[in-house]
Length: 95
Figure 1 (spheres, rainbow, N blue to C red):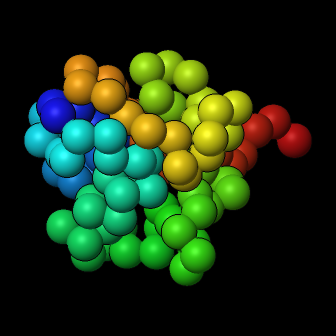
Figure 2 (spheres, rainbow, N blue to C red; figure 1 turned 60 degrees about the horizontal axis):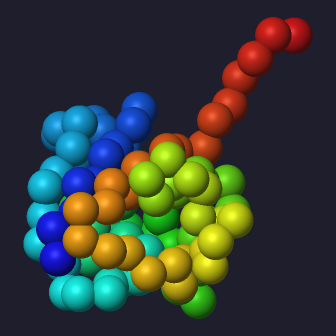
Figure 3 (tube, rainbow, N blue to C red; figure 1 turned 180 degrees about the vertical axis):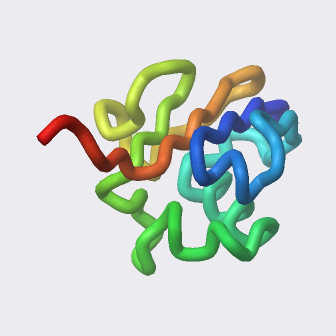
């Protein structure tokens, strides 16, 4: 299946581009896609998934604009044509 993976802030710098159009196995989960990306980009290793395969709690991962934590989390199944957006932790603000 075809997915568009979108990266923001520091992850965009690591990947070297705003988005990737990639093929993944049919019915791949969010965890499977993120694991593949961690393997392909060594600077992403252990930044997206915890050791148990769950999404690191400080991240925002969106499937078609909807946070996957409100779906099945890392086990959310992706479908052909979906977009997966990966946002790093947010810090800062007004003091």
